[in-house]
Image 1: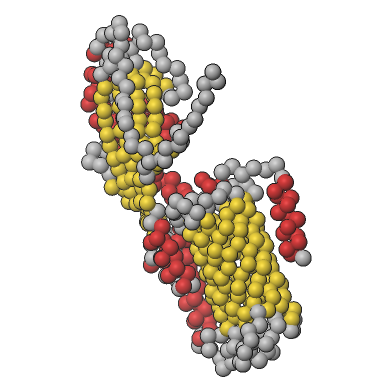
Image 2 (image 1 turned 45 degrees about the horizontal axis):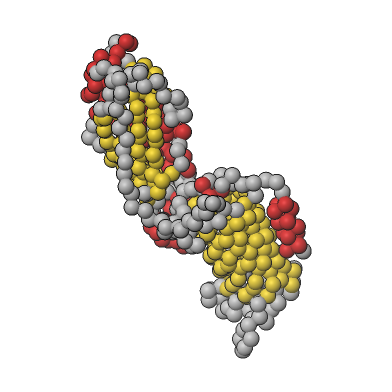
Length: 198
Length: 246
């Protein structure tokens, strides 16, 4: 459903008469980005003895803040900028039980800025994550966990200050052996969202 | 009443958060000024009938060696600084018409060479460390942004004689992650540019008599000096075929 909404929004944006006023020159050192991303997590079951068998799934919401710390570097296709920031993660697990998870993850993002309006990016985030799903499933016993996220996506700049984002993330939730059972939960997260730059 | 450990830790936590946010927003600018740029440019008083107009003929801006589009802001700033000297009766920008050759006027050419180093690799590594520490190390790890400018001003008198002035200045913005803002970079560039222009004008006002209307007669056939530089092209030559149609 979210993918469908995103595609409709993207089509509308592509057909709109708005033209970006060269966003390439607008994002400089010190430019901040606030965004909201939503997606749906899908379980990744790993085969083998002692691997995760829980098929967790549910909605994920991720408001974020980023700070651009470099001007564009590089001259080729890899030309881009580095930004750092933080992201709140809220997951409403709908399967196997209706439970919740919330976390805070510092985040690093590299945005390829060789193109004007369409900019791919790669991101990595990790931090503490609390969930009451743990304890109800055999894989995780403690409610205090960590969440690690790596993924890639594309930003489409509607104006030089606003962009639509879509991408994919791989998520891993485990407790770093802070409690006895620590098999870990892996999931895929296709997502869509928007960002404002100021 | 004995205070509970949780209250103590809450107070310590709040104090830590306030200190982190306050010191994590710090920023300061360090300018390495040229020797003669610390003073305001001397304002020269010359008789009104001795003043001649100045026309900015060309402004070349390069950044890290790459040519840039003309910046009206830079042009206005240079003209504003020249106006302060009081040497010229009127100042015209690159878009203003030149006075007729029979009139005495000064033609100016400006080369503004900027060098920017945002310490991208350094910022990336420091950012990783700051992020890994959950931003606790933000106040202790400053980031840097370097900006340097080299300005060359060529002033050509109506009789073709040319005076050339040069100045350079550099500065560094030191900032913590939470204190980063594009305004800080603008401030740094503003200070460095001001320092350069001040140094430039300090040199220029020493030649006040050179620009006085009575310093030289108008030539019947004024000599227009043109700088011709043969630059080595870094571009790959493109073959162009043309057909005359005959």
